[in-house]
Image (tube, rainbow, N blue to C red; front, side):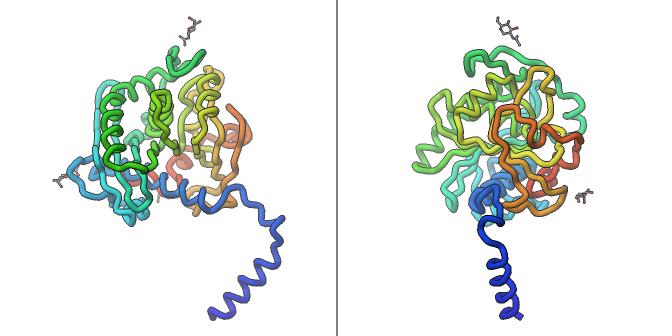
Length: 289
Ligand SMILES: *[C@@H]1O[C@H](CO)[C@@H](O)[C@H](O)[C@H]1NC(C)=O
Ligand SMILES: *[C@@H]1O[C@H](CO)[C@@H](O)[C@H](O)[C@H]1NC(C)=O
Ligand SMILES: *[C@@H]1O[C@H](CO)[C@@H](O)[C@H](O)[C@H]1NC(C)=O
């Protein structure tokens, strides 16, 4: 059986000349996008928002690589103040040499989407920039404490790469927090999943020009389309648009890389507005709630 499988694979690979095996992303990039989706999923699990946990784990089974890496939480936070439910963890991953700050999304997604407000405020992040008022205030409630935790982690884990990640509301915090940290001289990589629009075109352009952003969207997920562009909001580039359906394994050939600030060529150009699509990012991302 194995012999015939190998023959079949060999003939398959010769039958598809390199020019026809169109790949939008490399398998390394796919692995990274999958890993940080699992880190984003892990922040929905209450056992991980707990400084006494020794390693991260997901009872829903949606963070196997995080578990295999034996990632350990260094600091957990859960600030359910008026600016809403800011929670997550900073973890050290010795296997992948990472410091990962993961922000949890809303635990009541449907209600959160329905109540999302569209207010913009002037921002000191960059010249001409306007930011979503609520997302910014949420980051602001935790920014000082998280920055000092990152400082001590970077001393304890020299050479580790700092990554900010999150899904949904958590993605908004990751991209805004990451932008603020970059302005303060840090060099985080940002992986966001189903990120809502967090500010105007000037802010989206500024974030785009800073680089090291992997903004992942899925088919017609409603959240990256909110708040609407007509209210003055935009999205940074590039977008990693997953084109395969809900609950379908994501592969290198089902992700398209869309370039351009506020582009309509990916998620934003779809006609649907799906909450189910918002929940599928490599894994059933909010399954732990
Ligand atoms: C946090 O960890 C402690 C000690 O392991 C445990 O007793 C507690 O139930 C945990 N809390 C949550 C929310 O999992
Ligand atoms: C930002 O400031 C400018 C100049 O004062 C003003 O015209 C604009 O309306 C402000 N934007 C917001 C969202 O408040
Ligand atoms: C995907 O899985 C979820 C959770 O098991 C389920 O509720 C949903 O109906 C599934 N969607 C599709 C399209 O199979």
